[in-house]
Length: 175
Length: 179
Image (cartoon, rainbow over all chains, first blue to last red):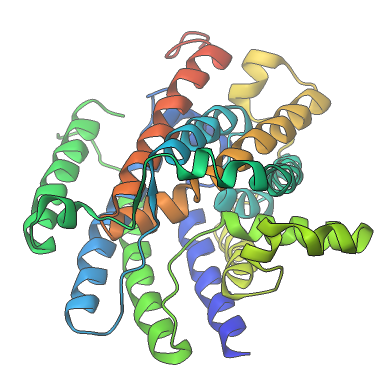
């Protein structure tokens, strides 16, 4: 039971922040892909910046463990490209579609239905992909610090510096 | 830089970073299993529940449904919570608005609700098929993946945006082209 309550409470806070960040909207998502308004990237990169420090600190203090997703080059790249193609037309991502309906943008309901169909189709395709595409370039659960042979605390400032430079660029360009 | 900066996405984003950290620590402590923010697996489970009602044997025999387990879990409730949180926040600050066809779409494709619905539906099919193949969406790969400095997160997020930029240019006509 507490698993459900924790999920729900976390989701309520997440949904309120997504809404206040104005990232639920079709307009913002598509404008980012048209390189006109980087609200989505500002939001995501700010979240990553803080979460990257917070989560690695929690791991260092033995309060949590990392659980990175496996790097499967074929699946990550092909799946990532397919996602991007659909994303541009849909104008929502899986997490934001539900919040978009909640703030009244009810055309997102059709996106949700489509995504359920897409998930069902993938379940049918999975047995055929498991031994082929999903096995190509499977490098396991690797992280950037692991690959570089560095401490995360050497990589975090570098990523943070790149993100901050992006923020300065976005604001200078009025994006 | 003297232009007024809109701090809203930065502040809300940074608070999501705090939320992700707190959630990781609390779920580890209370549930004994670390939960990271994510969304797309829930669509597999939702589809599984619907399919189960129509064809239970078929679903039982499918290895993907067996792998992802059709159940109401932490992430399923997270998605339900997103709905409640976004509804409450949009009503409280008066930004709730009924919308059937968004402006960028209307400029390109006109007022037809059916056409917008078809675009959202078909885009949704392709996007979710891709997200499950890539094993994550902008939340799971983008936010949680990059927070953990996972290599898969950088690759997936780069492909999401790269393909999204190309497709958006093609579908809506280049940068500001139709404005």
